Length: 386
Ligand code: KIV
Ligand code: ZN
Image (cartoon, rainbow, N blue to C red; front, side):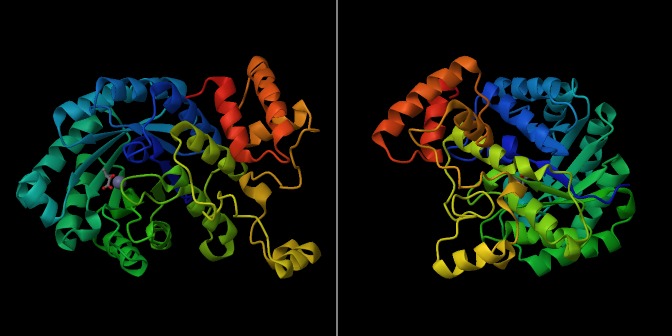
């Protein structure tokens, strides 16, 4: 089994279900293609049983995407698993992702099931998923707050029923890094059959620790990280893919691990998501925020001019951020504009580019400098993207 860290993107499922981030099926298809081009190992395309629209979106993504595995989420319910299986059936590589909660709190108050009933449900539904698909992931929802011995038992039942990936979500973003990392070390040492499966992290950001927790899991043997572009997701969001990927890449001497992400495409995908959902990111957001590579103070600028490494731990090109030296104004030409649109994740056809160029010239006449945010608005208005 290869030792690279698999990137499981759930922007289209956990990300999309957060307020202000919903997407239409054509928008999801656009993003799914970008995720595949980015080199994401697994794209979680949606929760197929949620609605006919969600089912159709997952199925269309499964037909479109090549290279990445396409996954669909399912509760431990027969209908969910059948819908998920039908939706991912056309995929080149497919996965069914089955989940049920394993914490006492969730089992008692949400599921109203006893521990033994939950174990039976895992055995039945993981096996059912496995009858449709060779690649089955099992998630123990609220895993980080579950009783350890019971969690281990639940994971063993999932392995025996055919699960190939085991995910331990920090569903409510409660864990802290040393504790979450140690949980993975303990499970890998104590779950029978642990060496036959891939362990996965899935972290929410309620305490701002989702990325740190994901990295702690990897340090303790997880080889799949579930994350979203720009960290979108329920409440405070999920672990941000761009931050995880660049931490592993920039600190490779420390972690000794790689992902298969084509990092110079990160910025374009991040911008594409902003323009599809309208959900903005903070200027100082790590990796893809507008200020992430801006150096304002004189002392920093002075150091940078002598040697960029003085204040830059990665280069903007590594993540596809366009160098700021190219200022777009009324004297700029079509080629420079097309180039910047491409860097921002918009591929405009000839006609759309003509419209965009006219709008750009009109704006440049009124403004000294045209910023990326202006260009995003122009691209949307010109291409008909919604
Ligand atoms: O946060 C969570 O527990 C989830 C699972 C369904 C994987 O999103
Ligand atoms: Zn989640």
